[in-house]
Structure formats: structure tokens, C-alpha cells
Image 1 (tube, rainbow, N blue to C red):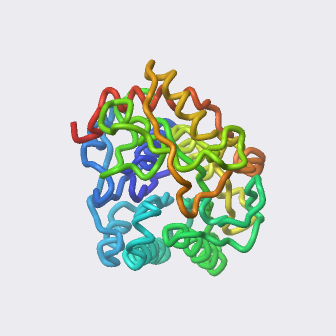
Image 2: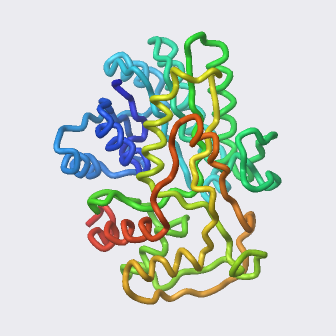
Length: 339
């Protein structure tokens, strides 16, 4: 299939482009590089050993998005494009709602206009909210995000579900990610957050490479195995494989839109991840425990049964794999794609 990958130069998008190529599909990237680097494209071509097509476009522009779909003529769309920093979404909610919803409206409108009926959406486990029982299961309702970023994901899930129900032949997979980390085994592409990292793994990696003085741990008094928060970390390469599995499964879906958790089903604590990274980089890393961060839950992890049974997918890589691959990327690219 020819697959339009919106936000395909980003962290998860770029790894999914490689997975699509490996599976024999033809990915075409659409990105405006607001949260990514054009250098990703040459790295992808280096890894894949073949050209990678990219269109620089602002997907909130309805006319430009329609023209893109006219030009590309995709068989399917995987939609990653969107703002993604939780903290920034709290500070700038209108910017997040406008960007994430408008880009999705434009993409879905262009798909409807041109008869494209296969859609895979990059959603998030944040849609479950604070009251969902563990492990998180796709049948849980009502969705109740705790920040504007999460609400954009929950809203888009509903929009896509309604569009699919109103459009005979339209099939959509809604992929709820847990905590993607790791990097491609080549060390050529990985996570390169702008500014101070919002997430634990890139922060640890930047401490290890000398860009940050020490890791701040938000609370060590939770009711968990070692007092620190536990999250379901998934290797980005496994996550990318989940997108290919979802794409290949769309025709077989009985529902027009269906949610799938992509996670390991296991929680890893802050200290467990930190110590795994210390093993990977071969040195102890400085940290300081501070107060809990508002809005953080003690533990989150997936029930990945549906993805295993219906998509034939499961996470294969370990926490140690995730740390080794992240360190290979970060040590070779101490300033990310900037040098």
C-alpha cells in the first residue's frame, strides 16, 4: 500500500516509516518540521538504502492538505501529526485544540473527498484518565483525560469513530500508546525533544551524555515497589511494528473503528529505568528526589490482550534493550539532530 504518514519525520513516525518499508509498503511523509528535523530524512534514507519521499506541508491548511492527498493518492493514512507536550497543552490549550483538531479535520476531509478509506490514528493511554482500573482496557468508559493534550486525543477518537460509522467501507484503528522509548538499532534516529525533555527517558539520556546536571525524581513515596511512579514503557521499534500490524488488519475488522492498546502490560518504576540506563551507559547517574508532580498517577500499564489476539502483535523488546538503544543514539548524537 502507498501510505501517507503525517508527522512522519517525528520520533514515532520516522520509526514507523522504516517498519512500513521493511514490510513492503510505500510510505510518503507529510511534515511541517515544527517538532522534528529535516535531517531525519537523510538518516532514514541511509538506513533504508532507498529514497524516502516527503512533502513539507501544514496540515491545518485545508486546501494544501487536499492538494497533498490529490498528489500522493494514498491507499491509507497513518496520522501522527500533532502537538504532544502535556505541560505546554495546559499552558496553551487553545493552540493544542486548534492544531490537533484542525489538522485532523483537514486530513479526514481530504480522505473523504478522495475516497481513501484506511486510517490508523496515533492516540494515547492518556485518554483513560485518573479513574480507570488497572490494567487499562479498551472497553473502559467514559474516557476522561486530565489535560488538553489528552483531550485532543479523546476527541479525535470520537470524531474518527463517527466519520467511520457514517462512511461505508471506512476502517480506522485507534492506537493507544503507553510510554514509547528506545531508538533504532542503527543509532541514526531516536528521540530528540526540543528544550527541556518532558519525559523520563530522554531526560535520563541527556544526564548521561552531560547535557543535564542530574535527574529530578518526582516523588518516592508512592504505594509502588520502590516508591517511585511506574509506567508501561514500550520500545519505539515494537510500537512501529504495531502500526504495520494495525494497517494490515483493517480489512478484517468487524467494526468500522476500534481501539487497541500498544503496551507491554508491565509497569517499570523510575528507579528501575534509571538503573537499567546506568547498566547501558556504564556509570552511575546523579538524581535528586523532589515532591510529587501534580497530576501524576502512581501506576499505569496496559492490558495488551486485544492487540495480541486481533492484530497478532506483542511487544518483544526489554527495558534493557530500550536503554541500550537509547544510549547508542544519544551518545552518538549528544545534541540530537542538531549535532
